[in-house]
Length: 385
Image (cartoon, rainbow, N blue to C red; front, side):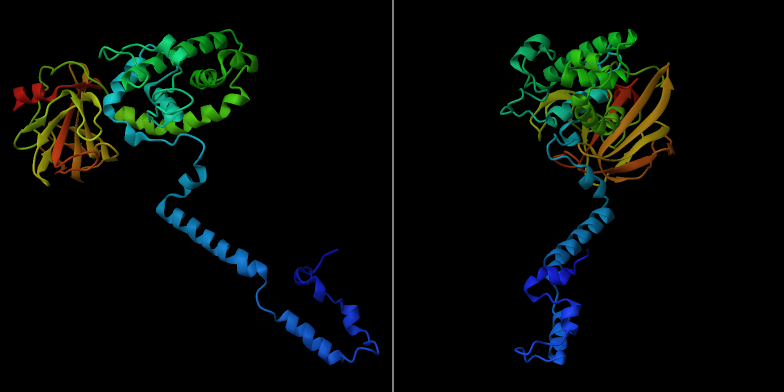
């Protein structure tokens, strides 16, 4: 039986149509016309509780959704998980990529980007010493660190609070797990992607993966969380490879700015903003705001856009020389003058000097990469300029 909303809201004033139509009792002098007038007044009463309480909230929430959709933030708002570590690529720059590569160099199934996403899932790349689940960015327990920890950066101490040591230690642990789940898969005991099975073994244990024969239910949320973070670290690794040797024959470079005033050379240094000591992957050339930045050699623009640490950044692929791929990068620009996929010649304008990203003032951060590894740009420029 369907009830009238208004009558249900005001039960003391409920009257059925039959009662309204029936003759009034002798002791009630109310006429049928008066009863009809009162009923009409009730029907004309102002907005009920729904309109006064729920409707404004509905209008407000609709406005918020419209705003998020227009600004491109709707997907983020819908998929955010307050209970998980939030992605924090801005806390990671290219100087960690060589260690991520080294940690996974001999590890089938675990890539540098996957290891970085794993760390993000664990801690958001935040070294929270007050964490109850473990210490450092990889959240190692004392027992876990005793098994996997080393002094990988050679600074005289082994600590889970040392980012490089933590990256290498988690890499060793993940690679060990990858070997175990690969062996199970080879035997036909489990099915699935090695990377997913490795993450599941980390979260739930190798035995649990073996019993389930796949990613167990208990580990699915963890695996999904790492996978969600993976694309942004794939991009980070592509843009920031690692260090190797010097220039090749016939691969000398033109100066990217008119005057080569070195304000910070290639090599280990303490970052002026983050205060973290690590590899400075290029050379900083001091130059005024808006000064012209030019391509050091002809090639194809591989990347041109905004990044969290390097601000506006351009990466140029110069092709292979003596069988090795050569790339240069131009960072902290104020303006981009090229786009991805564009071909440029040596000396062509690529952007203007600026101070975008993690920067203390206008300058050009210039890098040279050989086969995806950082090299000292000054050796290339000294011979060519």
